[in-house]
Amino acid sequence: RRRAEEMLLAERLKFERYFENIPLMAYNISFDGRIADCNMVAARTLGYDSKAELLGESAISTLYAPECQKEAKQIFEKWKKGDRIRNEELKVITKQRKIIDVLLNVETVLDHKGTPIHSISTHLDITERKRAHGESQKLQNRFRQAKRMEAIATLTGGIAHDYNNFLSVIMGNLFMAI
Image 1: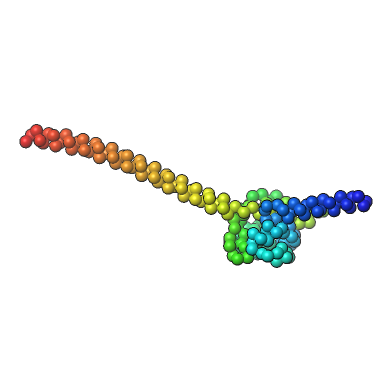
Image 2: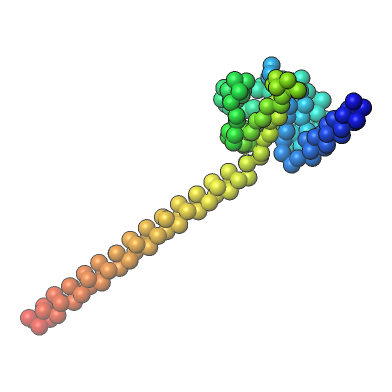
């Protein structure tokens, strides 16, 4: 029995190290929607000095931007029914009111009887990825526009050349007629 307790404690400590050191914002969310725990990456990314500022707060109203709270609530209800949550794109809001684009993933933690206790939820910050994708789209659009302009210039040059040849024939005929 004592050995089992030691092994359980060792596993718990290992899990806590993973939780604290994972390079994602990580949270334990209770079934009533409160933040039961979070890692320091989450606290710092969201602009809080300590985890204690987040603990016990409503996950929906504290973490998510106002425009995403309805969707976040629907996802939370879906999770409570037992659905897996994978790569849901949402927006979180920092203490300083800055918006961060994230991908949400949620797993359920069960007790020894298989009863759900809380979630392990992670946010992957995709703000920079989305900004880079937007920039890439702008560059692609500008490239397409430049290609269209090049095609129009080529077409216009061809028409001008043909028109010049046509005028040269007329001018030559007029010159000979005079």
